[in-house]
Amino acid sequence: MTDEDPYPFEVLEILGEGAFGAVCIARMKNDPLERQVAIKVLKQEYAKNPKVLHRTRDEARLLSRLHHPNIVTVEQLIEIEGRPILVMELVRGPDLKTLLRRHGAGLPPSVAMECVRQTCVALHIAYNEAVGDDGRALRVIHRDIKPSNMLLSVHGQLKVVDFGIATGRFSGRESKTDSVVMGSRPYMAPERLDRGNDTPAVDIYGAGMSLYELLTGNTMPLSVNPSSHDRSLTEHLLRLELPGMTALVNEDLRQLVRRMCAYDVDLRPTARDAANELGRLIDAVDPAHRLSLEEFAKQAVEPLYQDRKKVPLRVAVGRLEDKELLTGALGSERPAGLPQAEADPRTRSPRPRPRGRRTEFARQPMIFLGAIFGMVTGVGAIAANKATSAQDRAAARAAASDRTQVRVWFPSDVGARLGTHALTTPGPVPVSSGVQDLELFLDDGRTLTCKFEARPGMTVRYVVERGSGGISIDDGPVFPCLVSYDPR
Image (cartoon, rainbow, N blue to C red; front, side, top):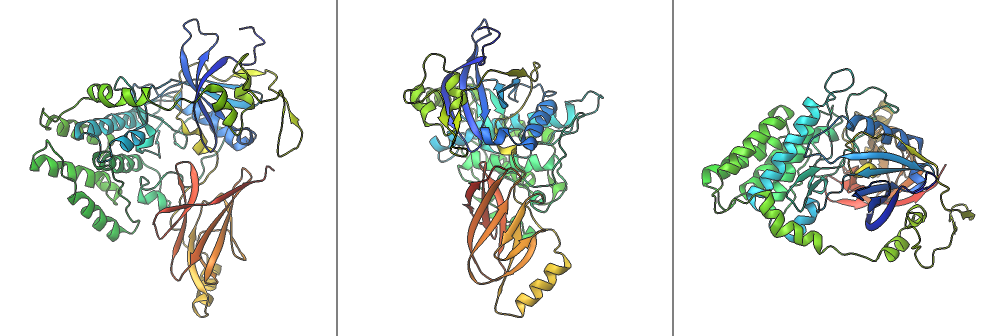
């Protein structure tokens, strides 16, 4: 590789394309050992958003202080033609959500508990032991703990990934901390929907919900209403009866999940206490039913990873919606049918291959999880803010007429419109009965149009799930919204 080589890596395999970018296996050209790494490439339209770039750098600075075997590392953040590219540790193995698709009834109890135990250890380190330049604890809170953000390698190594919406205390921050709620239901703690302060307890809630899912194969959606939440939690826990565990140990496990998923923040254990209790429960599993992560990885993870669907590289790159940058990183093997310059559908003008400016942001190991893509906008599910007096008066007028009143919740840095009403704060809105369009205007130029049928007293809540926005009616399932893009 020469100094002018615009591509310091060679793409070997496309692992997938998400809403905000592509994830690939690559070989670093300047590495004498020819190590393979994972790279995450942000889509071009998001790379032009200053807010996204600020948050990317902020997260890199924050997470560069985290060093732990259970947290995936970022080696470099480089830039090619204005496109940030994260060079990450390659974890050869699936996330736990993918594993659950092969184990519909849940993972072996000892495996599920050990995965969550190690996750809690990582959370304790991130909040209590990582320090900044001033020597103070960084107080990192992940805010999106769920099975899809836990990777298990073919060697049985558990890695927590995707700190894309994490919070922390550090110097040199470029962007302010948004007051919006982001995350994924049903792993999001009730206080996050109620706009409460983020504390380490929100990660414990996500870990508890993940533990239940890993043990049973089922999610446990709970209401944000306190009484309904506790009643539903009790009903789900009654069905938690696992093999290889005595009645007493099963009851101890149920009580631990109950405390981790408690509505009341003060009832939840710390990450360290949860990890210690899970260790005790694992030791209490009958040895005939106890399986280590290394044993499970050899039996189940390695075959799954080896059998993953491999699409020929030329075909995989050709399918990408935003393929130009990766095409240049293929060296002499340019995918068939891809010209040197391809028309940009937004400008109708030819877009040349990148010319080669490369800037290294950081060389020290950095922790930065995969879903940088999830941090591009301040979107998420928000709960109750008191309505303004004007909205209260509007609601009263609606009650006195034949119109329908619905309650709408959306992030504080997102513009919204419902019918003829431009909304500035969450709360009750009077609308006509029937199908309505809730429009949400994001600061990266996207507009989300969410359809629903209005009925009296309903609550419409905007939620981000698996990186995509949707709406939840009365805390029910999430329905997707139509996304349009207007780069401004």
